[in-house]
Length: 230
Image 1 (tube, rainbow, N blue to C red):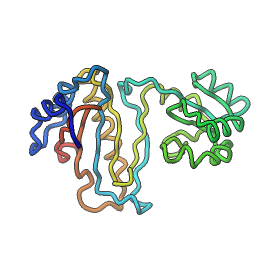
Image 2 (tube, rainbow, N blue to C red):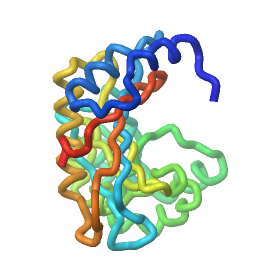
Image 3 (cartoon, one colour):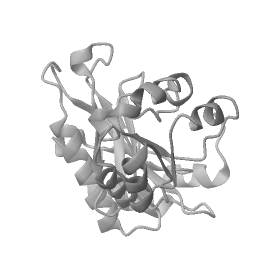
Image 4 (cartoon, rainbow, N blue to C red):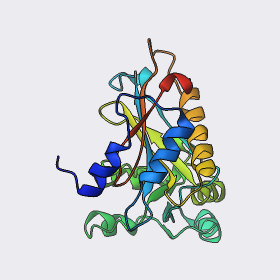
């Protein structure tokens, strides 16, 4: 993959053979984020899990103390009093069956997170093929299938992020923006790592955190020493 001049210059500042301390890595990533927009800073965590086994799955959510710096649009599937509650709590969109054709046939996807009350999961299930591959399917483990829609919306708007293994057993999570202070990014990162360490499946043998890298949208990755995070 061919990289631009800015990336190549930035990459020279990173010692690829080095495993950095978390604070050092975050400081470097922030410094190297030089795009004209406010880049997102992400953590990429390679685990020793084998996601093909149900007892080695990792999935959950955590509220980052300083949020993600992104305005999150929330869609809530609810009816009656719960729909009114969701609207009052600040949901961007609220609806029920009538949203199915809009999403399925018209390709409407102007939302970032989907919350549903348990009684609506039969309806939401019809959208599995559309929402599933995009990681938008509500899930009880991440707190997006719940009767407490007010809390779910408040947490999401406050900076709740979901973490889960991808097909290659890596977790990708945003920890903020390049405009955040180093302290804010470090706080968010430590909060995320605390949650991921807690979520370690009992069935995982050997080293749990294989590699941890932080990177901005356009910048090079900086590797963190995983032994400093256990």
